[in-house]
Image 1 (cartoon, rainbow, N blue to C red):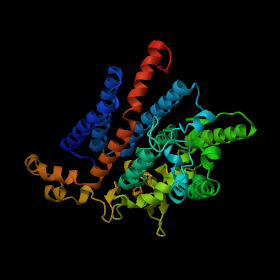
Image 2: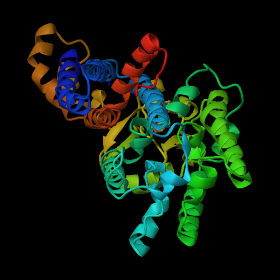
Image 3: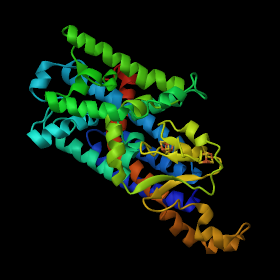
Image 4: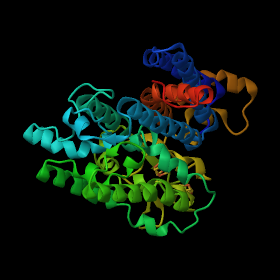
Length: 410
Ligand code: SF4
Ligand code: SF4
């Protein structure tokens, strides 16, 4: 499933052209940001080329995703400290409804917003540094109808953290078999979070359980209740974001806890893409099942692997399958794999140079129309748009750290 150099270069150039506009628009605040933006746009075009040319989707996606998550956390925390003096969410900020809305909070907000017309999160409907409720809702909607649960491997602000830790060791230090038993737990967390939020008209999951608070903002610890909440989020955060991914090589936060991930799995069926296993190529070795960081490959009664609803479309199984039996597919179609393409049928096993040149345009057309081409391009563009201001800002701050000794700019 490697693409030709011409197709890969064309797609990378198209990505660079598109991103140039976005990066310029997102980084007009200073010449330093503009330079950093140009570097990031070039890097993303490079990742685009490498994914298509080498056929290794997850290898370069993961690199992008980790850089994006680290940059997001670094910039988000720095901006909070610049604006408030600390990462803590104070009663003042709550009263002014100035808390940035995290997409993971969305499932709790939908029922109270639709049925009671109340926004139960202390953020603005529109406005504030990260847009407010409607822009985040729009972002979620776009991601779910285009990428489905691909959000969790290409767009999530935090996903690169557990994904990165899961990639550090070559082999798991503890047998990950037990963690698979918990893979439906996010659906229970989702139901609990949605119902409790509606019953209490409070974002209870955010206040009591969210493990992501270890890398974003948290309620200021001013009394015993807040202290208990802090102990819970630190324990869950360290366990699910760092320790379990490191030891099991599985994305624990994403695979066994996150309620937004569960919602994406359910609503993501509207997306036009799927990950499919080509039955006549698969030899049943189950390497894909072991390598899936999201615990999303199950077993059919025949013992063959099957892709489950929770698939985050990361591409890891495609990278590791020795038979090249897994690929992206359009909904309702099979895999559009190289082995069955028109070009390869015409070319035969040992094509002459002339034949290859003559069939070049047909191959280009076929490669451009594959589900993999569309999905990967859309996913990189989506992630690139979200990271377009964070990564350049992080680069400028790191430069500032080297020259002025601090990440804070104001
Ligand atoms: S790694 Fe490939 S060949 Fe092995 S079970 Fe999975 S799909 Fe089949
Ligand atoms: S099934 Fe494949 S694409 Fe889906 S989450 Fe697992 S490794 Fe990633």
